Length: 212
Length: 212
DNA sequence: GGCAATAACTGATCGTGATCATATTAGATC
DNA sequence: GATCTAATATGATCACGATCAGTTATTGCC
Image 1: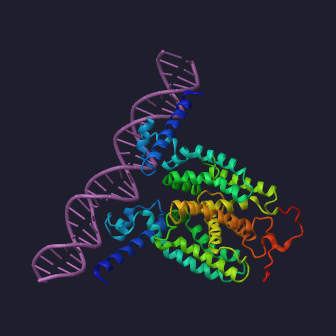
Image 2: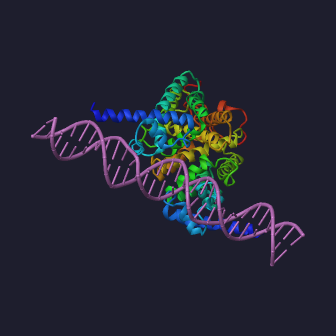
Image 3: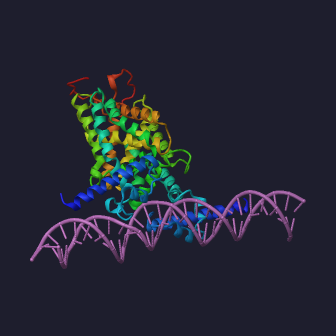
């Protein structure tokens, strides 16, 4: 590896570590770019050669962590017997992670949902999440839990969308607390599995007064 | 009304108009607080006596517009015969509105989802939206389109969440274009009505190889 | 090693959102 | 209407994120 590339890697790593420590200690808004530069031992102008703007630091810092949460969540999801349980097992790690640093979490989520949803940046962290959800859905289909005619990617979005509603409702607006957010998300996923439609009735219950 | 209160109202209205004109012409990021102050005929320090921060100007400017979109959307939704059509009729106005000013729309949506979801600010615009969705669901239940045992508010979130996923996917990340976003949203809503579960089958189709 | 070309770095500087001590104005009291 | 009090307004000022002209370090070539 050339000396240039090596230096660049080292600097990026120093930036990552400095930003990580300062964000965890002082929060996102409470940390200035200059502090990060000082701690990383670079000039103030150098930072923005490595990241486009301050918010991109969030992805630099938390990409690995998020990937770890994917791994652990998917591992837990393997034990689950229903789709809802599997999804909640995947989501649980994020609830835990977010609860420990709510301010940062809100910024990360905003970044992931509004800027990083596409494939081009940060290795498509959100798309990867969606893919994992889709995989869980395919597993559920494979074991006969779901209708065979659904589109897994449409279903994945429907699940993911509920997750990405309840987390800001909890962290951003304070509409619900964590426990309620998790409970409501679970209820929403179960509703999605059951379906809203009058003709889509589980166990063929006897009460069927008005069919269309 | 006292002279003080009258002056305050007039100033707020001047701010609203100035911000509105400048945002539409130059976008949100492209408009500075000082420009708004100049145009509104107030000192630069006065602006932040009326709004907490710049983003709050978005709500000040677009609250009426959003309420108008609610009214018109709900009116269109009355013609619809299915829940999906009714919801899409409500959402359609927003797609139109967002398409005309994508940069502003993204900021507004971010504000609505991440900071304004609660009841305390901006008259709870997002909660009102959710309430309208819930009303459409209740209507569908009343005409027997939906299972009678669902929780309308849980269902409303499930619908709203899909809307609030596809709009950023379109405007923010550029993951899809407008047409595709609308199509995918419709597909998602229809899936939600049908349900994912294997036992929730419409029209009792003959093919039922593996039950549970 | 010397030298030119180019990539990478730097801190001074800029424009911005937001704040604050000070000034101005409206309302209350006599 | 004079005087006092409290609400409101102001522009100078601050801290920050981001930029940029000027500097330093690395590479390839002789």
